[in-house]
Length: 94
Ligand SMILES: [Zn+2]
Image 1 (tube, rainbow, N blue to C red):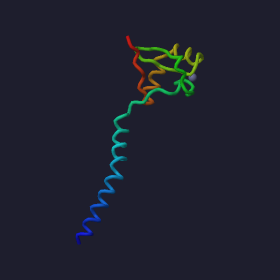
Image 2 (cartoon, rainbow, N blue to C red):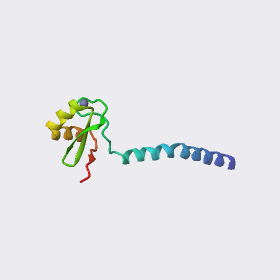
Image 3 (cartoon, rainbow, N blue to C red):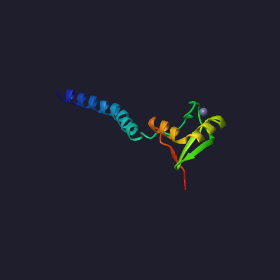
Image 4 (spheres, rainbow, N blue to C red):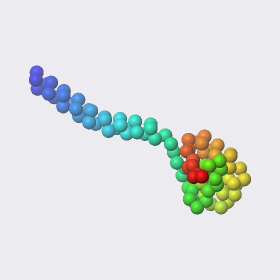
């Protein structure tokens, strides 16, 4: 009977070791809900860090000069698009 108890303990330990890393990763994933901007809000191409529009202390990055001009005309619209998509915009230092 003692052997069975030991076997069960080993199985339980193995289960704990297998599940705990994935559980903690899951918890970490929940904490990090902030998502950085990686795509241009106008054309969905990857952003080029040289091109951005600052609006109300938020920085909207875009892919290039064409989208930069579009975003500069109506930054509020693009801030909303990005924030609706769960993206946290970078704060512009004062
Ligand atoms: Zn673009």
